Image (cartoon, rainbow, N blue to C red; front, side, top):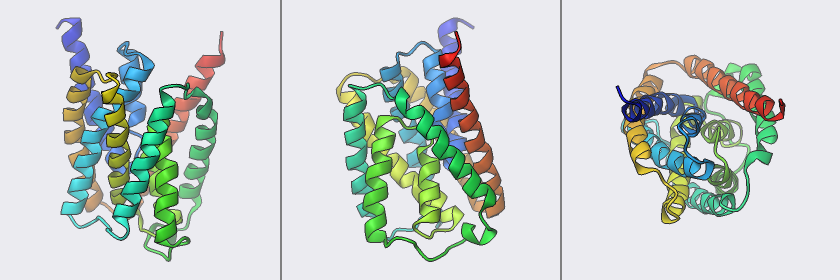
Length: 256
């Protein structure tokens, strides 16, 4: 097998793994983005191509969640509009700035999310009263998390799940499902801007996207069939792995 064929196979397999993980707990970008960078894709092109391939997985997962009846629809369009606006703003900014300075903050935020999910009573994983009215939650969360995804991205799905759990009052399954709609929105908005700038590596992005469809279908179907405790465990594993991956990147950047 020649090197080019091997790299394309690797992209496809990485797409499957990223789609599966992302559809359940978020964090698929922590597989896809390093794979693109390891293949020699320059950072801004890797970010752009990552948005293309992730759009396939988040769309597939959202569609499957809607099909199986796990998609809450209240104020959904308001959240979509705010997320798109935030993602476009973030993608505009990332073309001019390095995103590396965000990494330490993201590690801290992910660690707090990990502790919240680890220590939260089981009742918090079921439907509860919202802490913010939906008319306020969706614009605020959409703008903030959309901006973050357009600008940097790792862990966006996980952040959405936690926000929907802690502030919007959703149960874990419904939060996981609705997070995919907003994740898809920010992926597509940022991708459109990157594509217009000619930054997308189409061969890698489409191959990874095909893998994403397979992984996202498998992961979203698994969520329907499993108890919330399984999703919680998978979430903890995915977020824990994301934290370790980012810590390792930080360590490599400071070591001689």
